[in-house]
Image (cartoon, rainbow, N blue to C red; front, top):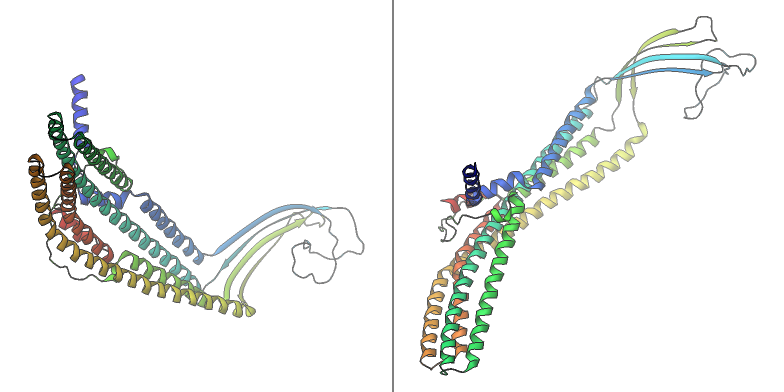
Length: 442
């Protein structure tokens, strides 16, 4: 039993330490990021709204039943429509009476619009355009999560490269301190040299600590997108520690970017709202049928007399043309606003792509220079150490060359990742991370 538990623990640890590839991280964010799930719920609500709108094609059937105790006094004359005085029917009496009689009523009324000049269809079209807009919002939210996940992934790799360089710098500083302490004890160097060497070691250790903090911070960010615990995240380097090939992809159509597609769906929704207003100031035709029964203890034929009726009615809001036209003008302005916003989004995406392309070109050139700077820094550091041992240089000069070497190592480690980050920015502006993920994997 103990052996079985041990095997399970070892397998669990091995699974937890399985490197997370870039495509796996992006796919998890696409499915698990809470903002994506919220947007999907909005799509479900929009789909339910379509079903609700379609019910307007169904006839309306109302029923009522009541029992009351009231007087039977009545009077000739009209009573205008209002909501305070209760209606009463029956023949008038010669004098008022305070005595009450029981009354009962039950009835059905069916009301159906056989045609409506496209009013109901326009509302269904509006509900469907709302669903398409929410679906576009889901795609945009998923893309944002994917892009942020990929950026966090590259950030982890960059932070890890910084930690590698900082760790190497700590080791060099420790070796320098050991050598300086030996020279100080032999009274070949002043004690101040040892203090300077210890300060450089502490500085290198601090840089390593900041690097580990950056790794932890980036892992926490990636964990928020993927639903994984930060301690269980181990990223796979893939090809991202080497320069990507400089093969230029065919320029993507910015109109296919999820941000642009969402705005296109927003424009369609605004136009659908305008279309419903175009169908608002129209006659309303109704086919109606009713049957009801009423009775009162004040008549000898109690409990009830029944009636039925069929009818066709037309209702037309004659004075609603002015407010409807005002609403149409307001909605037309909304349509123009959303169309202008679409042009603005395309302009911003084009600007982002151009800046990303410029950054990509510059980062490639810098990546070519980084190895040269690294070799020069290594040579300078080696010469400074030799000069110090020969008494021709101070410990400050050695410390300066070690700091320069540490920075050159960091720059060399980040140079290739900066190219990948710029490439990610290009694909993010174009709205498709598929080529980036495939490049990083192969």
